[in-house]
Length: 274
Image (cartoon, rainbow, N blue to C red; front, side):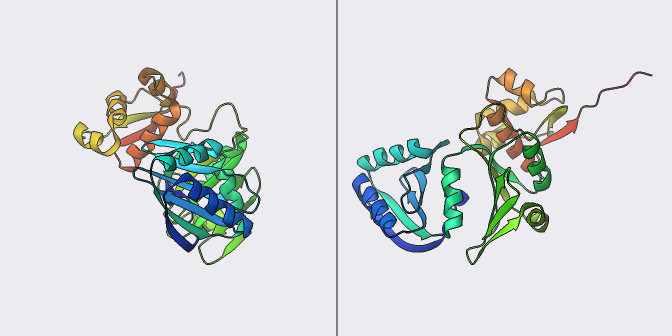
């Protein structure tokens, strides 16, 4: 999870033996008008807390396959620190980046680890705008991040050396050819249908000769179940219905399968009469 969050310039590392130690650290940083992020690593969990003066604590927490955001994440971190310690790293970031990270910490991650190898960023942005999406799209490359604030037209570029506000369309065209991972964070007040990568008449076929054991080891049992259903007749919604799984979760695994070239997708076109 921590790879989704810029680390900034490290100013302190320490072991936090208790929840009180974390609360005191956050209070001290806010009193100093500090802007940055506190990154935590526990025995089997990670977390990030954006920090700026006067801010109430919101966080991102991930343990196992569970991602928690907002105040609930902060409470979970404090409970875990009552039971054991965590390694803390304090990183300084530009105020504009921290402001966006606060929004991310309150948002819902609806799509993760999309790759520019398979997703056209410009098309993704246009589709989200058409559907009335409100939130943040984060694009992370090697040593740089781009934050698209939708439905606004501006973007923020950050590369650890400098931060600049840019026009979204122009910046997207500059980074379109670069390898990067994309996360889509929906604002917490949003409701209704979420955007999906696979739409309409797209159906899927599993790559031939793929060992189920290899899929199980790489992506888990749900991926194996999904592959068993990929015969070229099912779209995302039918797959989700037959598997009795959330469409977002089925879509996430389909994207991972596609990235590994373990599935193929096609447009099922309707025939017209003669």
